[in-house]
Length: 368
Image (cartoon, rainbow, N blue to C red; front, side, top):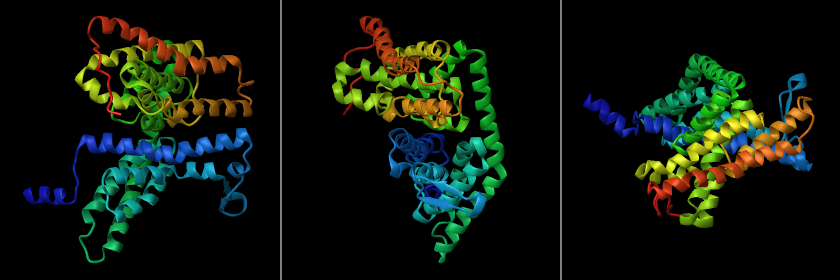
């Protein structure tokens, strides 16, 4: 047993929830951003602003009727599987040969997993990366052994579990979306609060939303919750952090406040209460839906990705004849849910807590 532990330590293989579900999922979200989200943004800009080089085909894969033409944005989006796998591998500190071998593993797993492919990619990539690390530099022909073991193990695991995991994740997401359609008020509160809290925690709300395929009304509630946390903390901490903190949290992430939350959990009350209010307003009053990429549901105002995702969904619905047009109420709802209500509500909820001494000056200070 001691030899086995020593071997794992030498190979930097640590079986821990933090490494696999916090570090790996956080990296997975970065992989998603650099592929799927960037692709969506470029496609939207190209289409709406009529930018030729963003909409023109740059590569065609296949021949004849099965050929698929890709523009820059769609090519980025097609690389989501490899992007996630490489990001996860880097978080696990995989050596180069293992890291590069995860590219085909990620592509295959995401494809085999269907709608729930991202969650399958998380599990399969972890297994393949750790096996690859175990055999790395153990033989004199490492340049052959490590890539072969990593690729065969990864695609083998994908063949076994990608489809079932993908279907399970998709089923959970469908159940959440169905429940939100059935009970928009109560589910609006639950989804908004849970996904918003996940965004602030050191896990990835974007990866969760993508893994579950969270779109529609449920996606709109998720956007509301994430915006409540980001804009809420940005505005509530403005006296301590000024404009730098406003930008870092409002356009970056409320995760920056985790250290302060650990020291004083009460600072988390105002933005979470704001999420509980904006969620049902989003679902019941404005019927805000995320019909863009599911990953955008968990991004909030980070780079305005959540808002771009909602707009992308509007455009797609209009083109498909599912929506007559983009009206003033659409824009009003998006602005109120994303920016105005989170700011106002969080500030109001924080006022009595400051008077009671639950939140003191300096409790929200960031080292920026």
